[in-house]
Length: 338
Image: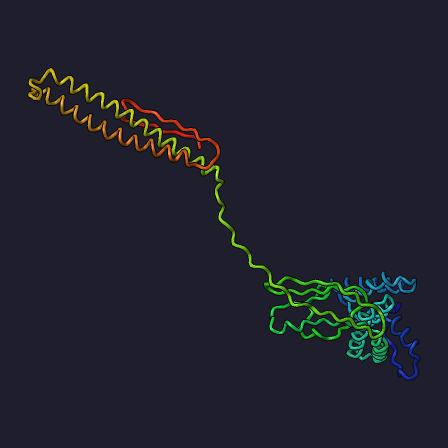
């Protein structure tokens, strides 16, 4: 049984066929004569295309054009043919997508010419010519962008080549989204509604894109003031405590120096005439006295510095610190909570 989608089209002179009959014949019959038998994936694609084509024809007869058009489009994608293109174009015209139908009729005319299908080529060209006066057109302009080489304009998500800017491009009636973007510029987006009707033309002028603001440099994090205050108060308490311990230690050394001088008195006569033991005791007492003086002076300065640090610290959590002496005062322990 001959497949109507792929049956060879009988050759006739176009001048003996009525236009309506020629169109019916072109749409009902299949594409060019069948190619040599193929196997594998291509054969599966052809089989799927045949089923989709038949479904599309049935839906067209039932008036379900919106459902039929995707069937023809997918059939054409799987296995391209002139007959499928003609049916797809006819379907698109019936749902009001005039620009898409016009483009598909023209594509069918070129494909039919390559295959030597004169009658189909004629039908396709006449249908495209009949649609042309009814086409709605959209003009997108950006006259300010001649110097901006990286500007990209898109129509319905597809790039619109620079050569098409300012050109009246056929579009299907309805809503279209125009976008423009460039490096360092704020993107632009607008929805345009193109009405149906003969010689309808809508012009959309893209405004000059605004500059994006310069990014602000990230500021270095500033420690909270209460943290700085806590650290300073702890340091003040620790330094002041060390000063107090030094004063205490110096006082102990001073007492030891006095006791050593008193003990030397038993080994000395007439004040400074001392035996060897007396000389040693007085020498040790003098060294302890000098150490006591230096230790007390350093302790007093440290205690004063610690007090200043504590009193000038920013407000915050009170610091806790502790100090302590080890042994006779020769060692010092300082601790705190930050």
